[in-house]
Length: 216
Image 1 (tube, one colour):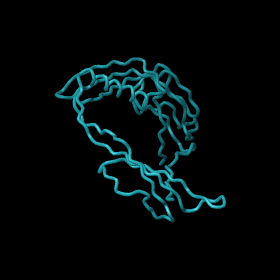
Image 2: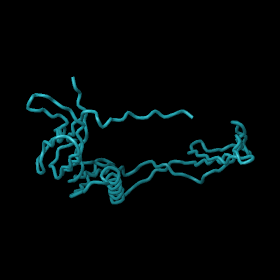
Image 3: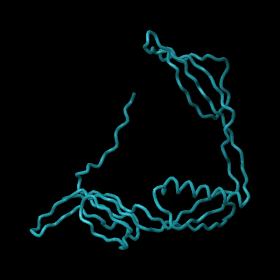
Image 4: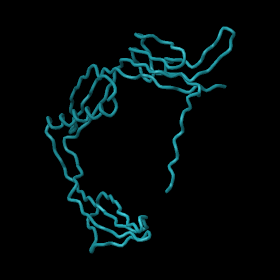
């Protein structure tokens, strides 16, 4: 099988600063390594250094560290979600299941006829044969075709707003599951045949990340 290349990893000895990723008001600082430059209650802007990985001594000598820790802050965030009053949805239909004999890399259908749908999702699993307790390159492939078509769905204003609330909830679960949402305001508006939901958040969560120091 073809190997998947590993992503580059940032070594914990690479000199780094711990910087703010957004404008916020600091609520807590828990340094792990480096020199803390900010205090609780300070306002910071995106890019400000929170924990420095640079230490300059009185003698003029400069040392570099891998600054790390955790800094939480309160910040505001605005998101806009959209929902058309009519949209084309993909509708799955009854799945079609077929079996295929896999014999030394060859696929031999164990059914008659062809799978008719032009658009479908495909999945397969294999049951291998064995001989004397060892698997051999023979087995049965269980093939599943899930046909689908398209249908136009129209929504009332209340239905569209309910779908937008679901999108808002899904966004919070995906991106802010470990944060505290202190306040949330939703405003709905309509432009032509699309309903928009403008959401204004007040969030308390992690506001920092490490950024490598490039030494000349």
